[in-house]
Length: 314
Image (cartoon, rainbow, N blue to C red; front, side, top):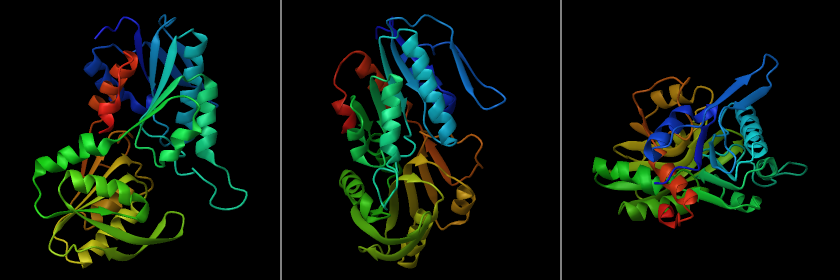
């Protein structure tokens, strides 16, 4: 790969992931200094020439969401003012993605606001993994590549485990399309959890749609936040006679005491990717972390060389 005019810059949210991507592409990370002042303000200094360069800024807008989002915007502004030729924001986890529509009067559509902020900051292209809602791509007036971790990473992992009598379970009606596609790839059956959510972050499972008795279940979701939905879904499956229960998601938000709750649950293994770093979170023998570095490296390579990234969507 010709790397003469490509720069990979790591935000503080994805330092370990950025190092992996740097090694895959054989491109050293762009030198820079980042710091927070005592009053909370973020500052960055780029320590090498980036004029006319193809810059990729890697930064998830994960918790602390507002700090990481602000860091991304300020970093992009710094590269724009340093005359970078093209700036691609590589956002493995897109924060505020759940606020993609008005669910009640006088409510914001924050996912759209964030898209506007990123575009106005000077980003030319966005690369993300598993947007919570596909329509967020339409919130941008610049190209957006929304890659999926399940086909390239999660499905591959479960196939190597050679689990028999597998049923892929969607934890709610919104994830049925995702679960159906994965079930087809794994030659598995499909089940759906009929869920009611009385208030934010509180889920009440009502029913399991599908025959799961005596089978092994893999609950597939795009993210796990507090763990409430996944745990209640697992309990419902356990009550229906499921033998082994696996949970898988792309984004391990794991807020509050989610890891401890998963540890105590009937779930046998929780498989996640490193779109959100696990540093600072309680360690658990149940949690298996898979890397998305290779997938993102291939996408960055294709974008830099102006070749198709369509094969990565399969």
